Amino acid sequence: MTRLFCLVLSLAFAMPLRADVAEHPVTLWRVQGQSNVVYLLGSIHMLRQQDYPLPRAIDAAYDDAERLIMELDMDDLDNAAVQAMFNGAGVLHNGKTLQDLMGEEAWQQATVAAAAIDIPIEMLASSEPWLAAITVEMMMLYRAGFNPLLGVEMTMLSRALNDGKPIDGLETAAEQLSFLDGLSLEAQRDMLLQTLEDSADIDTMIDTMISAWQNGDVAALEAGLLDSIEQYPELHEALVSARNREWAETIETLLDDDDDYLVIVGALHLVGTDGVPNLLAGKGLAVRQLSEPPPLK
Image 1 (tube, one colour):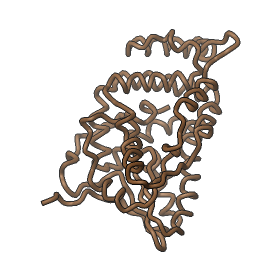
Image 2 (cartoon, one colour):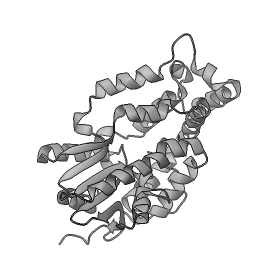
Image 3 (tube, helix red, strand yellow):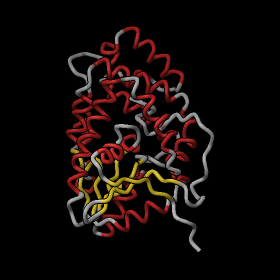
């Protein structure tokens, strides 16, 4: 897809302020309803221990919200069943191999790119290209010290379970699988090749990516996230734009509620002209990006 599935971003800009400096922007928006508030938090799905603590503005939004909504309903998710579902759809049968699906030219590119990052390409032989891309992404993120248990969703899930706050999902795992498995073979090839090629620069991407996210640098996030995926219109439409439109419609309905909500989705979905905050603002809603509060005394 784009920049290790947009969990690791290639951002070409100078290092911004550190996250412990007060009153910088945060990747968090506030949408005002008639009688409630919806917060939109851009997530990094995997983080490292050194990336904590999270900005205090996130804690304040969590404390204010009565309900949480994530891309998936995380507290009711059967991880083993989801893994089996994805493997069932993405593992090849009937003697076909990844090399067959890639074609000779793309396969040679993939072989060279995989060797450059010390990924044994043969371990991907029975995967469809989209599943191979996910496998490479996860391997590279683990190598770099990222852990899904430290991601924003898992952190907020743990807090919500302890506090008894309800959690809902914008999508089901089956829907997310359909977005990937429904991609054309050409789009899947593009996804795998870009993931392999971007992985070579992972060590130089990480700190700038995390700093940009912590400091709510929207321009940098747009450049790092959207410039890459917009090169591939099918990927952009299926995995980003179409979902953003659906989510904006759903979130608009939440603004008729009495409860306040914290909606947590990948940061990619909250930046750009077709990002959820911009779509909601286009409906005439009051949307503003939040900032880190002054230091505690």
